[in-house]
Length: 444
Image (cartoon, rainbow, N blue to C red; front, side):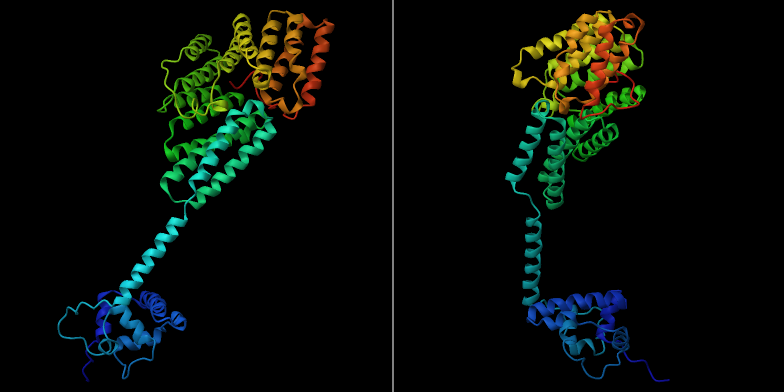
């Protein structure tokens, strides 16, 4: 039997690298592209090797060198002259360390530079980030002076713009800023969807804000969105779930006094829905006496829709008092809210809050069967333009309409007239009632 030919140097190098045909041909094609660049000959870039040729090379059955560009490519792959690769491997089991040509060093440097340039292009100009920050600041602070449909259009545009910028940048600092702005835009969308009477989209936007907050571990954003989910939960007749959500919100770090006050007001409403009068009153007191004076960058520094002004707090507590049947407490809180609003300039008085406080006052008066006072309290509400008639206004009016059907008002012509005005007002509103919600499951 004829002796087997000694393995070639190429065979030994392939075996030591544990290359299969598939991995060999991948390396070969990559080397072909680099040789093409180094020699300035693009025809080399498409060079490859068939499996039959590869097997023939491995068996050592090569009498003459392969045609170019194969020798150039193999030399680039293994660092040995092509002729040596097809000759028997030297007895020394450790092959010589291949020399590195200057062209290889230059090529590596060019590849590294190209990669760095690609990375540098994946950024967003800082001035663009400033524009996005200014946009969320404007939307939040002008929320109460902008119609809900217009707020929706602005916040949606900002969210889409921010998401597009997130796809462009890989800079950690920029991505953190963009995730925060995206979360804030989603939180505003949740609020405005609620005002427009769209409960499920409001829930989804709050969850989106929570997820963005989790990515960057931003406590105030997560707390705000959990608080929003809490009042959306009791709107859906799930007060126990709402209580769990608000307790989760209260345990996030970095919350300022405004955030604590807002969450206490939401907690008070939740206890009222659960029928726990004592805890509801306790939470109302907590909302009025924040345990510290700290600030955070969402509820305080941006504020606006993320804030919780004294008049909004008073309006919210009036609603809670109504839920527990405390007419005196509701009247006092609603009157205080309207007094605070009256101290503002007419152009800065938020229609949504003032309308809701006026309706709460009217409801408190109806509990005491003071029909004339209720009519007087509601008169400004009927002048609210249709674009400003949010879900909170409509649901409060629906509750007032239900009160007017009680036996005490059954034969009162003024009660019947007031009921008709409420129905006409609601029918022409841009928003809609939330349907299956429990009356007075109202947002703070």
